[in-house]
Image (spheres, rainbow, N blue to C red):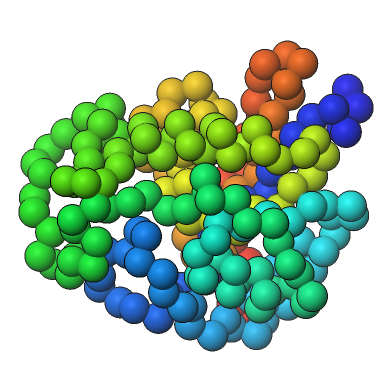
Length: 195
C-alpha cells in the first residue's frame, strides 16, 4: 500500500515540566532544560523522517520541546491535542488529590473531576485532531493523556490506552490505514538514552 495513502503519526511527549508535584492539565507551564545528549539523539531520530509535517499541542511545554529539539521548527498548533482538563482540580498538589478508590480501566476512563474532562472526552477530541493531520508522516508534540487516547483509538478500546506508560521525550508511533479502517501500533514509549 502506498505510504502516502496512510497517516503515520509519531507522537512525542513533551519534556519534563518546571513545576513539580502539581496536577497540570490545562495549566500552561514551561519545560526544564533538556539533556543535551537526549536532545541530539531525538533530533536525529525525528530528522530522519524526510518530508514529515510537524504539529503540536498549543501548550508551552509542547511548543518548547519542539523548539528545543528541532531548530527552526514551527509546528502547526492543534487545540484538540491539549492535555486533559482536570477542571476544579487543576493546580492541586498530587499529595492532596482525593482517592477515587479501586476502579476498572473503563471506570477510570469515564471519571472526571468537577468542570473537567474524562479520558473518553479527550479521546473524542483526539479523534477530531487526528483527522486534521495529512496523509504521510506527521510528528506531533503532545501530552501523555493525548498519546494514551491515541493508543486507545488504535486498539479500538479507548480505556485500554490508560494501561500504557508514556515517559517524557518518548516516541509512540501509530499508523492509520483509512482505506482499510485499521491501525498499526509500531512502538510505544520508545525512549532515547540520556548518556
